[in-house]
Length: 257
Image (cartoon, rainbow, N blue to C red; front, side, top):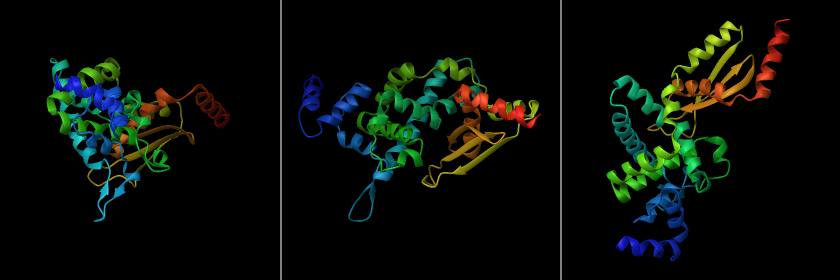
């Protein structure tokens, strides 16, 4: 009864009404401690610095949310696939909690429009929205508890926005398959990977690109070089447009004449 009364009051009155509306629109509830969610929206590029030099941003909540999401996803995969072995469950969980997957979820929820970031942060770090999603789940956990965030992720987010059938059909070794295809067609393929300078030691982030015959055709990121290169290879099949395909074929025709 109290929440029924407080919900319209918090949404429509007070200095934080805009933040209450944002959380209610994205997740379907009104928070108890709105300060946690305001903090979750502040990317480190827009940090507020306290007098003692400590930065105020969402990195600590991101760290917590990462662990919460992995735990909930483990529950979800275990319950949904009772006949599958550990290897299958580990791979599926990895795909669900990957940087690209969480970034896509954040965009579908509209979180990308609410993140507070410094100029150029979106170009320098391509997964700030996924990081903010992790921070949000950390905030929900602290504000509402584990059972609440478990139900929110599984019933309201995974159920609505994840294509589990597609995820379970994906061959995890995209890189080997792409290399094999290039070798059969006598294409030159190169992977270039590097650690993102702004990533923290406790939460590393790597970026990778893949080039075929000197043309950049794929991009990926992950918490290791291997994961980033796998994501880059996967992106080739799903992101290469007709113009790029035509350009690659024209280039191949020229070098084989």
